[in-house]
Length: 253
DNA sequence: ACACTGACCTGCGAGC
DNA sequence: TGCTCGCAGGTCAGTG
Image (cartoon, rainbow, N blue to C red; front, side):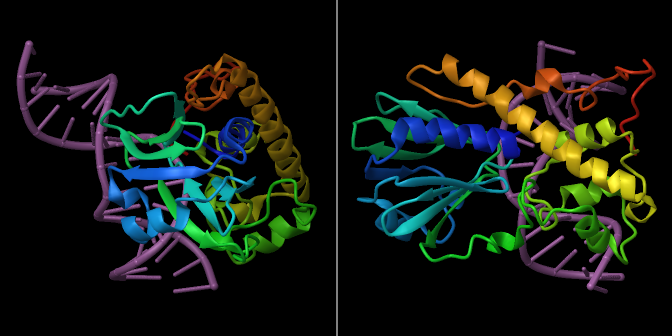
């Protein structure tokens, strides 16, 4: 399940592999992945080069010569680089590159989406995304203001991409566990210290996860599929027993 | 304005 | 063994 750190890892890996390569051809096997029509998608991208590699929240953003290719992996989207054309039932889009390799998008659940954007798109407000976790505008007072007049659980708030972009289910659990905050606690009932801790732990955990994801890059040969090793370090998500007090972990909060 | 629900889609595990 | 059912996951549209 790609969240911010996995997306960042995919981005860095792809940057090393395909920067400045040209898209020679595109085959689309499952049209719904590409928003806005198959032919437009092909026309806008064929002949374009991968110039810059950016990320906003969980969106991969490839800046091409004349447009931006945005890609969201949702739950199971993956990119593979292949030396020859090959597809299976989960391959949905194949980009033929100028070095004769193929960049293949695979997604078992078909939830991922790609979209072509104009170069001048405002990435600050793209998809109503909030600040990146390391943005200096993310402060205790910002979270307090965001939670004003709201009554829902703090975990739900962390999952909202328009507060802080990039946190998903796994990291929300890890962050709140590290802070000692029950996920179901109302966002109204947090203390100033809680909000400060959430910011600190968000940054620490995401940074560590990116570094852990980065360590798997070495194992890629001609193909790349990024799963990330961070799940090995999860302290609470998918765990059955608490690593601190050894009591059972309740799934419902 | 906010909160909640369902749709999207497939694989997998549980229960019969 | 084979079947059905429900869940997981992120986002967004629709409804209350």
